[in-house]
Image 1 (cartoon, rainbow, N blue to C red):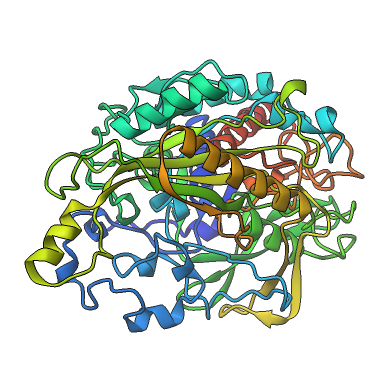
Image 2: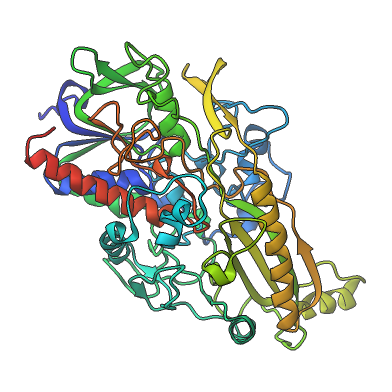
Length: 565
């Protein structure tokens, strides 16, 4: 009989905390380079047998009816996420087991998943590059700090990630949103094509199909999308990118990566004699026993707020206010894209009737590329940075129709042809938006919980007022009627794009990590997720997170080869 060696009794080259978008890439990149990697995930593994994208609603106990089901009582925050439903709620955390606090007047919606792959199982898959308009924004408008890296530094790694992941989209030649390596784009609806043409002709603005991490043709042993449209429930054909079936799978295949599930990391263990990390301590999620694991380096990819929580909880010796906090900026500069503004209306010139049985269900929409503050000609007098729009157009059922019986059924089926635009605006990095450790609150594993204090500011408010006005203006020019305008800014967290809190920079006095995500204070600890972001841009950040991680890991491998670690 063969006995497997206890993975906790050996030392690794690297510990990677978190198995999502960045953790999967870190494990893959390092293991394929020959490093011995321990991949720690706080949750359980997920089997494709759990996927429910084709399961009819009548098979569910509560029919997925809004407000119905005992499971909702344990997830009052998580159900604010559109993707948390009766189909998959157990992928999302129990809010009472995973508490956090906020000031009474500053709500924050922290939507989380603790499973192998994390939020890559349910993410929106919109994948956009940052440009120097974003990375060097401080030099353009004087606010905040520039990133210590440029677009040219990231471009090769965007290429590598896109070619592996598979991003469908169309090249547009717009400098505000650099083009990438695309699979064939999904098709626009007739209303979207009309809107694109009108907006381009009248305003010179670019409307494109969303750049999405969904395959439109077979790619890297994964099948093309079959357009069932319910991606948040999993994908049996692996047509959208999720780390368990791509990067994590590749890492494990090398034989160099050992994955530990239900490993809730509490803190990083330090060697006071060398000021180096020697590993991490974690709580077994099932037994609640405290355990430790050792490695030469520690890489945090737990998600921005969780990674920073671990660093703040790792105070010891000379690191009295958290690991890597000599600048006092650990936890500061929290960002989440501002959302809420936009406009919607009807396009009466299109008479397509809605039909649930014909045509594909495209899990994608259109994207209006940023057009504010991109040059001197588009500079705004009352706000900085900018926004992009995500949306779509098509025939929809009229479920608010009046009447009874056959007349009601006919009215519902007649429906209307609608168009909608929703803004994603830049969230400015402000030190008064921060996370810290709540001295009186712990999670169910006894780990001190976060206190989150964030509001969107005046710049975000003015930006969204402009977004609402220009969205309505564009819809009107496109011939839309009964236009509804939204200008309010949603509470922080609703974009589910938490960024910052361990920002990168060249100066240890004004940043927490360097350009390769290494802590200035501890040379063998890295924060390779959204925590390292200096500014947010207005683009969905996951593609940039992955590119930053690959760049940092390749640099790390080079240092290993030179015996610098």
